[in-house]
Image 1: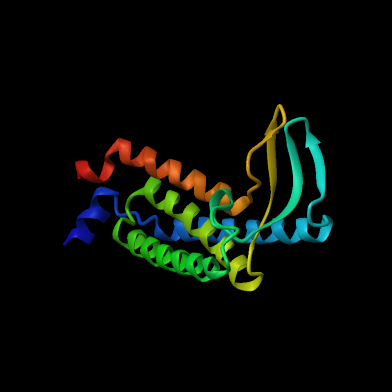
Image 2: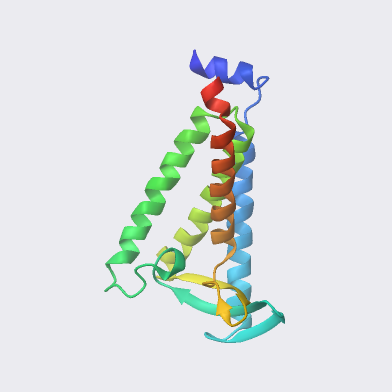
Length: 169
């Protein structure tokens, strides 16, 4: 019954497939850009692109902003578990709210990013980061396409939450 109501309210549209396509696109772009940077730069190399942006090659064993990067090694399995659990939850939410365009697109971005970094953790033991933004000698922690997609997806989820689309229905 709820499924039917959600589909009727969305004009019968399901955005789950679109979200999965977005996730696949993010996953592919993340993979290709990381492999390109690995093939083009030596670890620790810095290539200035603009006065505020460099390409670098760094390896992050931690999470966002290198959180837990210096831990003894247990963090790899921990972050793999979190990524798998988050991906399963996202797939469930995509099924449940498949009629919600912004919500599904946001989840697609997050799923693609989570899977991109998960691939690195499983195959390499670390995440490849290469985007380095800086201003007046202060550098934002290096990140990658997956991280950018996760951030954009999280911001879209916040926007969607403030719009209150599911609460009103």
